[in-house]
Structures are given as structure tokens and as C-alpha cells.
Image 1 (cartoon, rainbow, N blue to C red):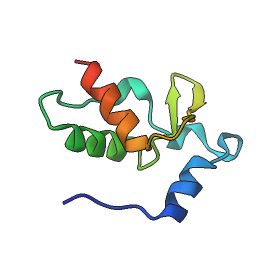
Image 2: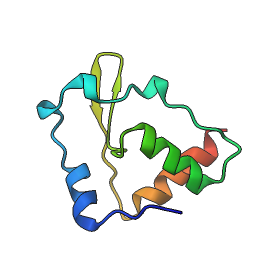
Image 3: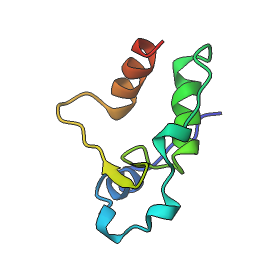
Image 4: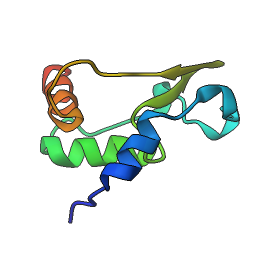
Length: 87
């Protein structure tokens, strides 16, 4: 079953200020593992869970990273495309 997020939750994740975050609480992108044989929706869900629910913020070593997406495509579509091309 897919968990839905509200527009308000999405906006909160998107507007997260990494200057207010404890780096120890943010997952390291190098530790994110997903089975490429899973369907795209399941891969996205696994990534989101491992990223503690916020796909906009992660850590790479000691550096906090915040991503943003420009354009009109939904985040889910962008992530699905990235996962499909990462095989």
C-alpha cells in the first residue's frame, strides 16, 4: 500500500532549512540501497523510507545536501525516471 503525503507535508519537506538540522539525524546517501529489480514505485518508497521520509535532504559524508527540482513535473515522476536510468 502506498502512503500518501499531503500538500502541506510536501511543502514542509521542500522548505526544510538544513541549517537547523543535526547532521547526525540525516541519512548518508552512500548508505541508501534499493533493489533495482523492484517496480519504480516500490523503489521510490524504499528510498524515501531510508531517507527518513524527506527525499530533499541527505548527507554525503559530513556535508548536508538539499535538493530542489525546477519545472512542472511532479517529484515522483522525476525520481522514477532517475531510478529507471540508474540500472
